[in-house]
Amino acid sequence: MKKLISFLVILSAASILKMSGQTGSDTSFYLITCGPGLETYSHYGHSALRVTIDSKGSDVVYNWGVFDFSTPNFGYRFAKGKLDYLLDAEPSNRFIRTYMQEERWVVFQKINLSGPEKKEMLELININLRPENIKYRYDFFYDDCSTRIRDLLEKVLGSKLVYTPAPDKFKPTFRYLVGTYQEEYPWLDFGIDLLMGTPADRKATDREKMFLPLELKKSFTGALVNRNGKMAPLLQNQQIVLDFPNPSVKNSFFLSPFFIFTLLCIGVIIFSAAVKGGKAARLIDIVLYSVFSLLAIMLLFTNFISAHHQMKYNLSLLWLSPFLPVCLYAVIGKKEWFGWFRTVFILSLVAFAIQITFPVIGNNSFIPLILIIITRSSVRAGYSWNPLSLKSF
Image 1 (spheres, helix red, strand yellow):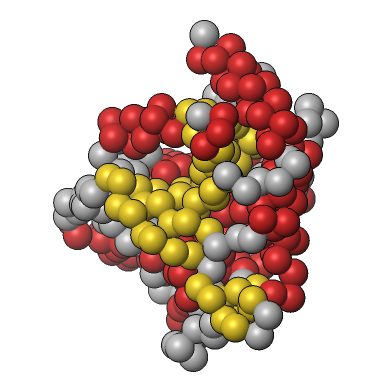
Image 2 (tube, one colour):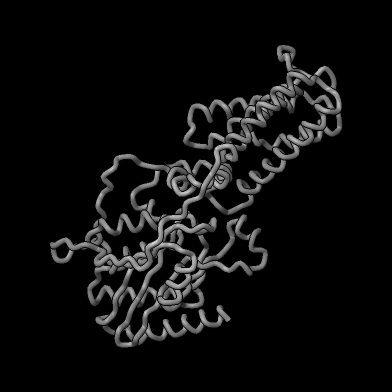
């Protein structure tokens, strides 16, 4: 039923836009910014575009951030980077009702456009509503609900749109920007940092930061439009439609990944010093290498099969290397494959050095996990200098 209503609204909105494309004189555009929510996909806020046409009694929100959970193989398509997002149109009151239920703040800001610019905006939105254009391949950093609105306005205003340089000289990376929205969700932060590769460690320009809705709002609020040599604000008349605080989540340090992994690391080191062989050592290694092997396979998928470019060239492949499953097989088969364990040991040492030297490119919770791999791989590497080496396999 909801899909049918959305289809009818889109069809109606497209018809109204065609009829109103003559002048656009009674049309107003508003940037909508929505605050973070509790769902994982909503932690980063949301942007949408509201269009009102007084003569038609039309008040519609255009939303480029819609996806369908019922899509066949949804999880796999998302992981592979082949999930399409789409443009949805719905009445403003229904859009607001959704955010009221989710208790997320919503702000409207009127966009300063002239008559011809409004007409062009209507034409561009109408093009976006065509069946062949309504879907697009989602890209978190470069093509999402916020960048779609930015790109429309840049196309309409061209050189008349002037961004005010950010006063702060600090240039954050994409990883840092995303991380600021994950501070209250340490396990999510750990998982995202594990999956993101070196493209996330590139510094984002002021324009690129607008992939985040709150950054788009900040940049557009400070942006100016050149009207015949006179500079006017791009956004006007901020209206707080819903006023809710950002969600606050209580977290215990003792349940954080860093604390739990550190305890596990200490336990593994103590165990390695006390137990130099036998069934217990073999069982522990089977469990540890099984978990790390699964993570290594996951990173191989995200690096070489997934289309998510943000996940490519992941340095975590140094410590979650493709050689871990080989080591797991060696442990299960009771094989003294010292060379494979030494390879894992050396790669993990390199990863540890990088993580300590450049902590901003990873996550502190990686450190105890890397130390676990260093410890257990050195134990089975057959090094004569290592007091922890197994006496027998």
